Length: 316
Ligand code: CP
Ligand code: NVA
Image (cartoon, rainbow, N blue to C red):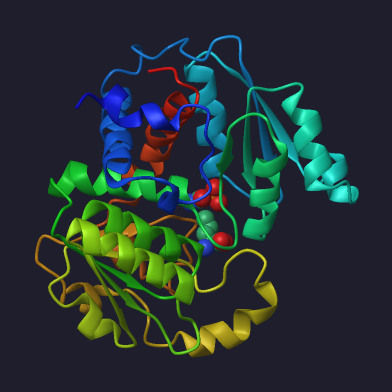
């Protein structure tokens, strides 16, 4: 099947979660991301004469810049709309914002809090909407992550990925990504910081069809044993700042350090979506060490999101 055939169903749709995708669509997006990366000129002007609204209710470096640059590279215009500046930040509803923006732009990218805010944006928009991170999911990150793993370790199917830390938005999307790719996901989190049960159930359901698996643990050493990929993220996500001190205590022992990485497969790679807190969830040595792919991972946000936008806007 060609990439365009694999992705044809996505034209005109939104992406809120990787669970919106079929396994062949997920792999198709990774293939397209590789093609987009290999020949940056080939896709120039594919979204010419379109404008895209980038709504951010939380901070961002990578996501904002990679979307802005990506849109420029495919000939499109972008409008960065911080909620500090638009009426959304003064209480105008998501539903009204969605209907107004849909009269001006051809696509919406939104970073927000609850997934319900994202879902409302989709419900009231008449243009494709992309989730640029919610409290529940971060699908664009995982497209880039898995593109990066494939570049360094080849085919994903059957590989073991261990998530160490908080059962957060990135962890949820990792679970879906592993399930779609037929990978074995292990999540090692402190008690009380589990992934949401509905996400685990859905990931298990997808994995049952792809040959993947999901394992939940509370022991990072057991979790990382023999893993091909080790991933972590900050202990305290955006919006949880009040819990910082409690989290620092509760996540003791969940740092990815050299001793923990030594338990993984000798060819194991390390991922972190960034920003990182060196000395908390990861040591300087691991983050800057030979197994770390974090800079390629950050770069691939650009290519993976260009691929996603081309697919959603039927520009293949
Ligand atoms: N990884 C990620 O989404 O980074 P930003 O918060 O900088 O966008
Ligand atoms: N889990 C983090 C990811 C940041 C890119 C957060 O939500 O703050």
